[in-house]
Length: 251
Image (cartoon, rainbow, N blue to C red):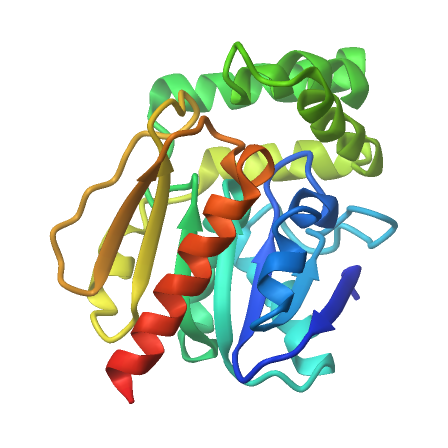
């Protein structure tokens, strides 16, 4: 079973999935703001915090593991929020678990596949992790996901989370990210599913998606890739406000 924490109260359950090298601690600042209105479930990804990285290096398998937590907590359907790699897992869940997603929030993430350059970058990352270790890889990669003027304590807080990622889990995640297909058509096919794209205006890690479909909303924040951590009040306000509006609209 994946490591998870559940708290808060509210009619709607919000599932929060972190990105690569991050843990549930990523949501530490935004979580209390969401707990005031929602039942909040944070889940660590396979291989993190002592859970076994079972199964293939496939994001659909990651989604299966997340749904095991939903089963254990007797959550049939909920809002899914995925940051970066967590968003890739969300997109993969649409293949086999679409009925379990009431609303989808891709936070600083994308449904597109890696291009050739990005795939080569994943391979370099895998080699670096195997040769130098997770700590060195995190110290090199994490600062790139923040603005140059980011607070040092924010960057260090993100780097510390990588301590919970064993080498095998990082390698497996990088392989799964490298090999993921383009799931944009799948996302757009589910026109019944409200989708929110939260994108940073200074995010070098993610190419912006801007689909024109009516079920997709796009909001740009004044942040880099780690806006969840650096501006939690704005992020939590966006997610809560959008979910509340969508629920009211569908009532």
